[in-house]
Image (cartoon, rainbow, N blue to C red; front, side):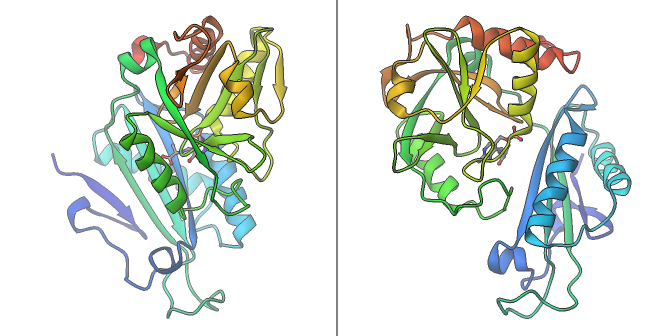
Length: 288
Ligand code: PDD
């Protein structure tokens, strides 16, 4: 069956879907996006993604292409037309099409593109054995709280990870603080069993999965500290992991080739994955 994309009011064959060459997303990366997971026909925290999308748009003063209810309908219709039950929906809003000129155009209409595709969840090998990360300087702009489509530093970091046979690259500030991964949030569990992750300041994207994991931690009575941690602290941690819409929770067992803790996925990480999924009535059996 051929894939279908939504582009500015029309459902079109994916292979022929396109926007104008003077779309400001193409010219300036002047836009924002969201990735929402779908498991067994259910979106994971759709409302959270709407809220963050609306916030990103407000921060960049891009008009909302449509209200939340209408957008939700488009997401569902795109899923339906692609006969998808599990996978991801990608949505992107840009400031629209206008002659290339840096200031905001006077009359552009925001562009909205929605695609859906099957993806396998994280592999059972990644979840059960854990993955390695590398560390690399965070060379991004200072508004990482906005889910902007300007992802060049993230692309370079992820490529560096692949070339070093690692799953993810952790982006590190000049002070040695781990901000987050190139497309995931970063976490450690200290020897005292405290869960630590960077606070949701401008330095990181406040992941929707991150919020779900925090809720699961609180429910399980795990002590949580939202504070910066350094690469050094992470190396000495008992456990580490990453979280995102597509990864859920994946244990990190090595940083720059050095084992974290005993080099195996930790108990708290496992419990948090289970707790996070349970928040949606799911277990890892739903996708592994
Ligand atoms: N990435 N940090 C960054 C820089 C991200 O790009 C992402 C998400 C996250 C995790 O956010 P969430 O839990 O809301 O997925 C953190 C998406 C999945 C992507 O770019 O494909």
